[in-house]
Amino acid sequence: MSQGRAFYEKNMTEQIGDRFQEETKYSPWSLKGHTLDWSRKPEPIKVYKDPIDMVPLPAVNPEDYPMPLVEALFKRRSKRVYLKEAILPLKDLAFLLWATQGVTARYGSQVLFRTAPSAGALYPVETYVHARSVEGLRQGIYHYRVDNFSLEFIREGDFSEELALAALGQAMVQKAQVVFLWTAVPERSRWKYRQRAWRYIYLDAGHICQNLYLAAEAADLGCCGIGAFFDDWVNSIIGVDPKEETIVYMATVGRPKTQEREV
Figure 1 (cartoon, rainbow, N blue to C red):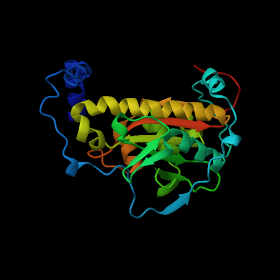
Figure 2: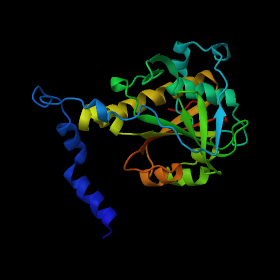
Figure 3: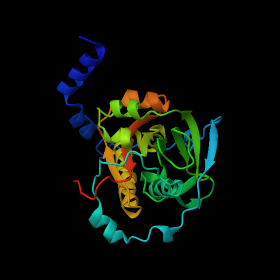
């Protein structure tokens, strides 16, 4: 039996999900003695030192997306069928990025408040996009710089087939104009919340993806969140070290092929 399979079967037998829930509970005594070491607080955002290119994003014009929030909530569905030949306007991608993690206020130089909430305003989730068919962008992997509203181009090429395989063969990944890839830098939250940080990381990712769903509706685009993927494969495609940063969520975005609503 392979080490990977043995590890998987051992942990499934031990029901680690139940253990995680139990061992990360708060109680009056579990918080005793915990103090914050401010000298060890991680950097609040990720910055690539030598990206292939830096792409400024166009300013978001709210008048381009007039759909009322209530209407977007009613229409929200997971849409998996896209027009493969469509090209996503860069302004729409900019809107989606702003809607998911755009900066709405600043507190000093260290805290950038976003459109989606985050436990303790620590924002452990980083956003990457795989651009297959986006106006003005070369195909490849980009990292979203929230502080200056730009994209860092970090890996060139069409990785839609590799991402589809990593997502357990889900065909929509290959046809989407863009795939959102959300990673977690756990130490940003763990520094304050210790092992309970993972609860907050997953909640943060959910808040972000729901914003994407609603923004996609407002832009007349289809969106579908993806939680089923081979983690290490996706980490490798992005190019992150899973000991420091790891994939937690994905989502496809594309021009819907039909008006049929999906669940």
